[in-house]
Length: 250
Image (cartoon, rainbow, N blue to C red):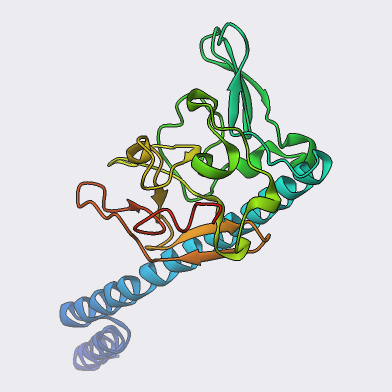
């Protein structure tokens, strides 16, 4: 093979390599376009995935409340129609007996066992809303609050638990709801009506994308985004009515 032939062959091979690189390689512009497309896809998918996860948590939350309201109904059936007490203390106030947990405050951290509804729920973890993250004030599972002002009663002010038969229009009266107060939101397990002096620490937490899950006295669970008694300092919390109509027995 002559020098000219070898040179021509080498040149041909070079053209072939350059052609392959041109065919199978990416230019900088092409890479930037691909990166931009991926960024757009991620930006679109992240909210969808986040929404789907929150929807699943809200469904789990509603299931927990359904079990709680069923347990509340069974408790009343077994106690001559008297609703489960919100709470009460033993003689030396060391132990709190509440609807969710029995807590011995003399130990640190508080020692706990299952609460007054545990006989019917058989699962203390249903007291925990999967979307709630916040200060639990010594309670191991938090997220829900019980209507203390009117239904569960408040022994501190001499109000006993009501009789279920006293509740007028039970399909409109809250028994349990997503509870919380403050900003950032802390747990509260005793739901207070707007007229209650302790309302500021007994609000509903609209934690599910602006909605709150609510268990009503007739046994059904629904969600609501109608927020009353709004305070811009606590944007996620409020009441279920301007007055006590969503809480009271009438």
